Image (cartoon, rainbow, N blue to C red; front, side, top):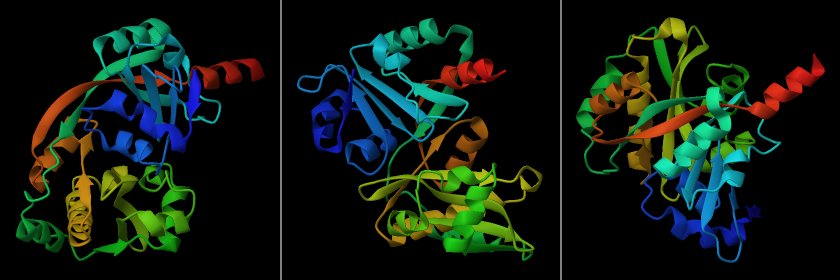
Length: 266
């Protein structure tokens, strides 16, 4: 198993041909994430880890499936197999430490959005809520809260976010209660992250904030890609104008290294 440098990303790019996941593009294009392969010169198997996600492609390889790097310290990781055979390896390795579920992909169609409808969603927001762009202060406020940190979690600093990211938050009495932002970035596009504080859900905040971000992206020639973890997120995407593409298998895998370290401490 070999770590793939940014300079060598082109060597594993053919293994991911046909994938429509923008997070894979983000890594291959050198923006974010890390990659490993079975061989550097003539790779047949590859793994990309970016944010909470791990993608496998090519010839199924158990060493790559076992690879959760030491820097990855979150309690779980979302593994996306490139084939049924990869899925079998994941299930065999992690057994009762993994949970299989479906995520939902949406087509990437720049011209499908109804601008007037998006503006209407924004204007329908109650006056007690304010939408504002994520500036430096809000960037760090977002990262302090567990429920909202993924809005900016993949950016090491505000300068990094200001250069590549786009996002908005909804505030209520000056407190952030919802956000829509760049989870990851790739050439001419972002992967959208939407989060709403639990007690503020079902108030139209997410659709208004997402509409604001989509309009911002379109005005800047950037595509706002959408991928859903559940049916609620998928329903929101459809309202915003996205068209369903496909569902795909994902495994939520407990980080066994975290489990082991906790066991050793106690």
